[in-house]
Length: 465
Image 1 (spheres, helix red, strand yellow):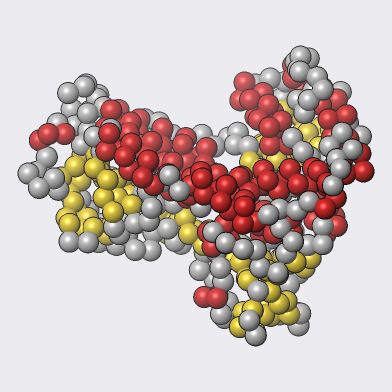
Image 2: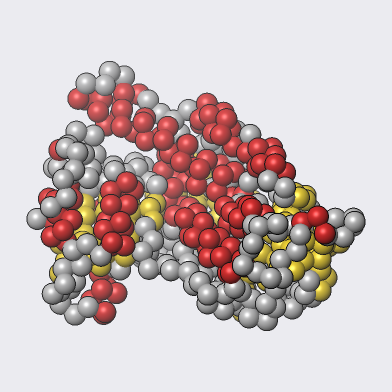
């Protein structure tokens, strides 16, 4: 067998006759779980992957990838609508055909479970369907089956947070929203984060009346307030109601739909009410106490190597680990860290220092690095470069009016501390800033970069000028 750098690694053919012992049992078949499983199997380990739902994980089946399919169709219709007075005949009448878009989305998602399971089998990994539950620190039950493991990876992702709201059981999830066969006439989204804004923007383009309820005055609090304010104005102009400082106290059935009652006396009605108040690690059914796996406030207690502080056999990655932002690239990063620590011993720590993120509204908003508030705390005298981009050629030709930037530059060194963008190509351009930050480029270095013109990237020099 290959030299894994781990003298305790077992030959995959030396497991128990009933196939019940593995070097590694992975709980979850998403981005993190699959990457660790295939890496360790390639090193000669015996590996099983246990999945309680369809094989493939949240991102591929119920998250970012199917969402982006809907977004692409919605963005195309919005682009045509904005350009209708400028040469797109019939563009003003276009809207997102939800049923057709749903069929298009399923052309991506439907093949995933079978393909993922087949690829695991081809790699020599044992796929197991069912709910895993620890019986002891090294033993799990999956139905009637018993698995023992030298190591266990918890990569079960996240689930909607449990809410102390009367009637919370009536809430639909983002999974439900993305699986809708037809868009309801109206919907209410509880919470003002990524899920609420992304779903509302899709629903509005499909002809629904959408309402977002936020319990304070800071929706999309992860992003810069000035950019959020511009997006909020654009959101409301679409006909989406955004109700701020409305704390939800009760959800009840009313007629054929639902009523959402807030503490300030306001009530909102919709045919569907969607949970947008965050997600938490999906750990509830794993029997962690029997496995000696410690938790704290609903999160796994992990050391700097993504290993359980109480059971050194157990590691975690991705949303289940909840150490970095809840993003697919973070899950991939965690997976690489865990695989290396399993195969070579615990020497590698995750690095979440430069992680770009985006909210896929229309227009989208993207961010990387420090916020202005944090930059001012850590770097007195930080230089803030900000402005409107609606008049830039690459933006103006799309018809979009909501576009802006804010860049944070360190005093003295000129290093880029943070970049925050709103506009049509924000998610792509933010990657350039992330690369520059990773490479230690200064603002002057980046401003001298030659780019294809005219493009979103070519705006960088103007932002930094």
